[in-house]
Length: 255
Ligand SMILES: NC(=O)c1ccc[n+]([C@@H]2O[C@H](COP(=O)([O-])OP(=O)(O)OC[C@H]3O[C@@H](n4cnc5c(N)ncnc54)[C@H](O)[C@@H]3O)[C@@H](O)[C@H]2O)c1
Image: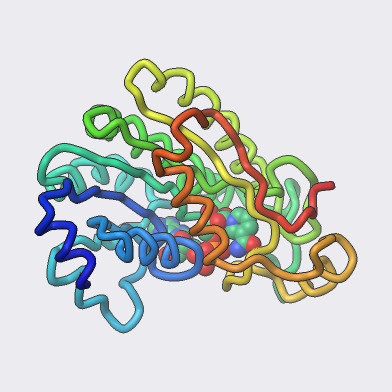
């Protein structure tokens, strides 16, 4: 808190980020990372921040929204825009994501996933990032901002637990990342993706320890702090010549 005050006292511009899916896991770690750097962070998730988040409530910076619902996605930009005081958005982190599971956490495939689940999955994992990135193009441009999309290793190899709907929605998001990096470069907006392997959050399936023992050269799960490091880097000036990339963070799992 002292360093935030210090920055404001020094008359430095306070940066703003929007992070979706920030109630837990990777999104929560990313939001906390930006806050620790003095950024103003607007968070979106299906559920309230656990135990309440006094700082968010105080500054009215958390919005509960179900991104699997197309009609809510449509209203999302209009709901969030007034929260950007100076019409500048320095970082948009499209992190919210969902992976359907069968009984006992089993894998559901392209034949066993019902069509409604396919639709909800694509709404959350693909259409929400598309709508937010398009919707805030001007505000991102005003700040020479950066977009980071959370894809997955499952987007480019068949994963033992992630279902087909999840995997294909993440592959589509990776492709969209390249397209939008190209389309938004003239606006001075960079668009990148990261592809996590097995990160220690609630989204993991019960059998993940077997993957760690047999498929991950570094023989451990990744941490949310390690992912937050990468997101922070991609949103910083240090990454000013990186756009359209999909960076794996997987302990070597893909090799
Ligand atoms: N943890 C991993 O191993 C891993 C691996 C690859 C990719 N990812 C991706 O990283 C991102 C974060 O995953 P995580 O591991 O932190 O998962 P998590 O389940 O712990 O958190 C997911 C977050 O997304 C939000 N969310 C989910 N559905 C939503 C909806 N319909 N509307 C609004 N918010 C919704 C949840 O509220 C939560 O805050 C996801 O996109 C996920 O696909 C995670």
